[in-house]
Image 1 (tube, rainbow, N blue to C red):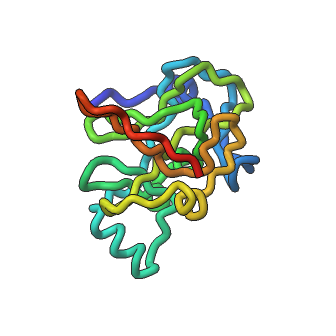
Image 2: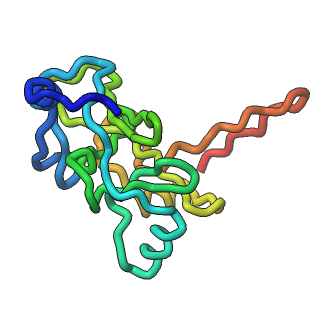
Length: 176
């Protein structure tokens, strides 16, 4: 277990503030410049087995608003026992990313972030089942409002591009 942080060390890690966001509802903003590679905050919350979480959501007992995928079996619900990290909004051109060390997710700066900038990461939502949904339905169900030039219109993960098998030409790309 790491040693307890001194008050000055805790002060040094105080990078963020929560306030209204132009992207969506509430967001997290840099209080001061955050250098690239900085661990900004842990994503805290109650750990819940995914089947339990999904069953509760299907029964209408809980929204999935602040849920972070931890691994194949477990999610973290930031709405319960969470911290300010739950308010970090999605962007298709994020300035932060999530790294998981020893089962603990942390938000890291992917680039230098100036004071006042909103923090974001790419949610890369994925289906809880193996069923794929169309891009149009994905945009309808999980719309993105990040406003970046790279916006794909959805919080869902970009579809993986399949690599052609050797000796076989790639399939034609169809436009709609």
